[in-house]
View 1 (cartoon, rainbow, N blue to C red):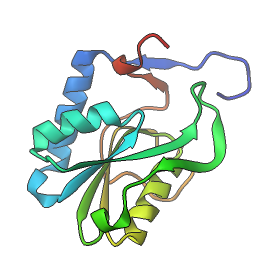
View 2 (tube, rainbow, N blue to C red):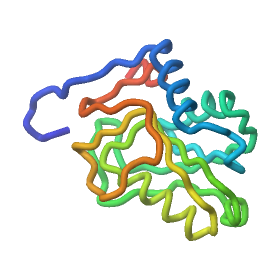
View 3 (tube, rainbow, N blue to C red):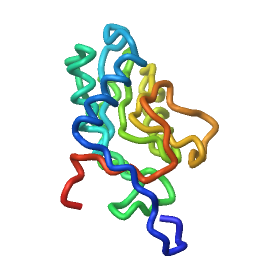
View 4 (cartoon, helix red, strand yellow):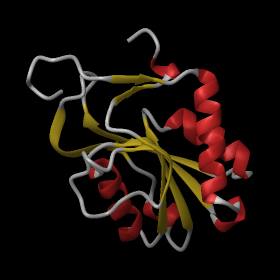
Amino acid sequence: MSGTGAEPVKDHVTWDDLDRLVADLAVAIGDGDAYDLLLAVTRGGLVPAGMLAYRLGIREILVAAVEYYDDEGETRDEAFFHHFPDPALLAGNRVLVVDEVWETGTTMAAVVARVRDAGGTPTTAVLHYKPGRSLIADRPDRWAATTEHWVVYPYKAGR
């Protein structure tokens, strides 16, 4: 990750921790009726987005497949979109954009730009926010916890 050869400090999240984080994020978000749909950022945001949708009562879920980090945590020069919802599905809608972690903010910024370009109104939500690693001026609208460590979620088991 840092190129120093040192193993990064890792926060290991259990399934119980994940449930608590999603519950905390749901409280921070508030009323699910304030959103027309949820946009899950894959891969990492897919599980928390589904859990959050249940807690908030949101049934309309779209998926954006975006890659900024590879499986070892190395970054690309810019976010790469494998696919993104048709703009007509976002236009005029209040969109809750969910990912698991805001590391540099680059992935979320790219997704937010596309939602806005499509005519949607995005609100960002993540489980973990890393303020000291963010490379952009913005921050998530809602988050459950802050950390500067590498976060290992239970659904990434076997990696």
